[in-house]
Image 1: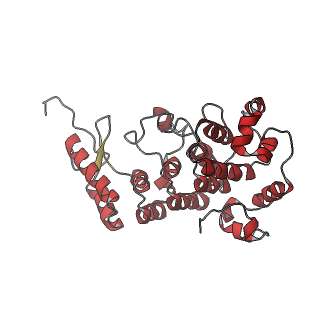
Image 2: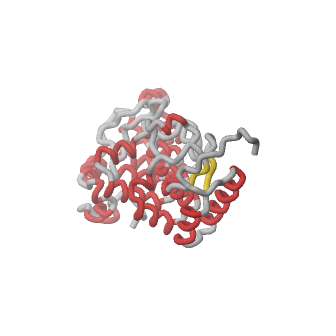
Image 3: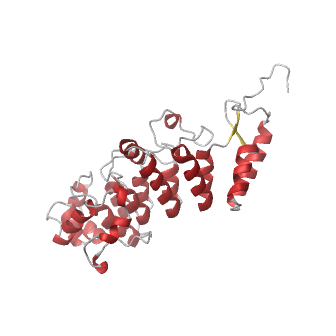
Length: 299
């Protein structure tokens, strides 16, 4: 090392690590999570051996938040459960810049990426764990802000987790988020609501048509008032949209007829379930099982 080179900070750690050593220990930790090693092994590695390199020349230990991102990628459910139980809300903090390139995210104007990551990889079980932590350990206003905030403009295109669930046709993720008070009226950086995003996906691609229709039926159950941008586009091309969403749904979305009595009743019933009792409260809905339109498979 040149005589005038500045030794990097180690984020409070006394042992010195070079950038090369950080890359080696980072990869070893990544592999350990990928291989679903026991939680105690992963925690020993995270707290004593693994470092990642920051752009400003610091060697930093992995935070619980960063470890949770790895658990999400590799669906390591025991490790995710441990991190959320032991570190609670801090496991959902914003990771360092080495995990998110967007400076805007670091300023706090965007949400930490855990919810979006759970949706992107369709990690239903870990998503339920995260939502449980938000429900139990966050104040209501903080929880709502966390869930409805836009994500990184680079990684997620400024979408909220709910937009991402619509974009990727993830019906289980979608209904979990809605049931835990994610707003169906929140807009992304383009001003689109989740319904706009879903309709755009239905128009642009014939892939996953069934899943998109399921998402649509779930989404409108939580939308007693239809507010979205694409209503004029529906009216301008009635034949196309009737084929995509069905004639009855088209009539309702375009404002040409009110929702069916069944849909109105189901919307009213859904609103009786608070986020604190979701999804368990679904079992208490006073309708026969065959009439319940939400096949969650979440229990």
